[in-house]
Length: 326
Image (cartoon, rainbow, N blue to C red; front, side, top):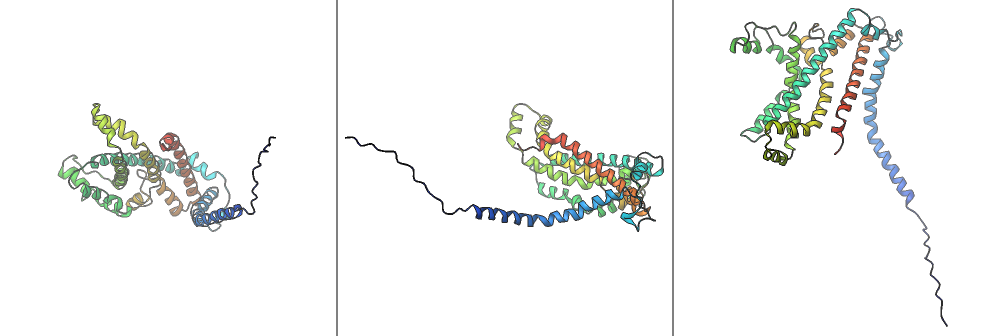
């Protein structure tokens, strides 16, 4: 007689309670905690940035001047009238805007080029071991920590035609020029703000590039030197490609910062520096607060903001690959 064994069924375990509700409650409380931490920053950004931006865009469609300023947001609506005066109509406002836009483009180009190019050159020179290198690096940061107001006043005295140190170096000490140039009036006035801007911004670019150079692996340079690559080829094919992300970030903020530059030209020349050195920011301040053309100033500000949006889009398309994680 054979005994048949029936397969045993697995025991069924019944869960009396579950910890899912406590976990959901914990996640919800964490989200509320994070939201409470972020809320003040979001509120600050809305009050300081978003609402003034919306208000400025709205006022650009208003005929807001000295006579209608009391009405403010209830001023007469003119639609695209301010933009038509700026872009299409033949009037002094349009010519002043065109001149300021051209000067701003020239100022931005040379300031950013001089800052990044000079900062990279100085960083390469200081990226070596030598006696007193730490002291030299510290002294190179001096122009960056000086306030813009002090920089403008300092260079204003240096640009003086008769007693300024610049003309003394160019004419009296070195003899490079026969006559003393006039820097604060006329065609040279734009260079009178470009050079101080480069002088002040160069140390920060140098610091960023120097940090990037010191983080590069030395094995790449050693291998390239063994293969016969000279200093220029190592710089071109190793240093520059590895520095592209740093160049991209500094290029983005450098263009925006230079375009919105106000302190140095305003301290040196006031709100009316003349057609040779008039920038977009001095134009906006002069037309808005000196000539009381608040609607015109708002429209110029909106156009400048739109130009910066276009610049950011072009920049992102050009450096998108460099900013992706490896």
